Length: 288
Ligand code: ZN
View 1 (cartoon, rainbow, N blue to C red):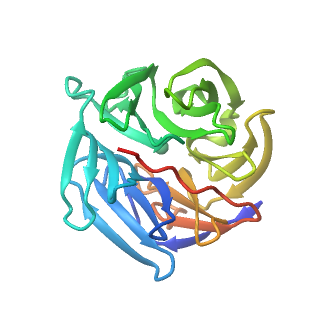
View 2 (tube, rainbow, N blue to C red):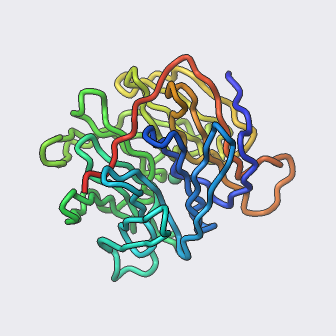
């Protein structure tokens, strides 16, 4: 196993949503329950923080500048210079006991993000897509905890994690319309490795999965379900991962703190990094 190193002793409550902005050479990430958006600059090791004033599930870069976020109040644009939050669409305005969780952009620049119950209600979440014209479609219903989402190199398959299902699923994906179908199991995650959370894709088409309560990030072949590599993390709650750095060969990993102060995890909530012999891909940006 490779080991990762702590690059930011952030002590986040629920670090999540790591994504590299190649244009600005920074890593965005969020603290969901800490209600913060972060921007980490590896060159200076400086970390900028914006208080969101509400739960924030994920962040993606926007082609026209700034970032898009999925917050408690819905899909929103966020201006990093003025800190202005502009809600664009709130598909669950009538559901006060759900919140947005993880999400990413697809190769066509649509912003996908899913929801989950804040009260532990099974299957109360959905996966939504925000199109470039700001319209929203509900794509998957009955979701437990909506998490990692990536698209295959040939842009014909979408991989998606509903954490509660303990696996990575595959869907046929249509680039032109964003439509999905033919859901099937891609990679079952063994229960003794914790629960699958965030996910990213590398330049060889393999997936990297963060393991909640699993002390690791793993690399899998999503076609054969073969386990290819394991990165050990000195924190139980490993939540998301993303390739970054000038060569896209550094895997950044977010973590969360335990519910109670469990001894033996002084770095919980920190941001970690590991240099790898494989590269990631530039993240897709929101087109709207
Ligand atoms: Zn997550």
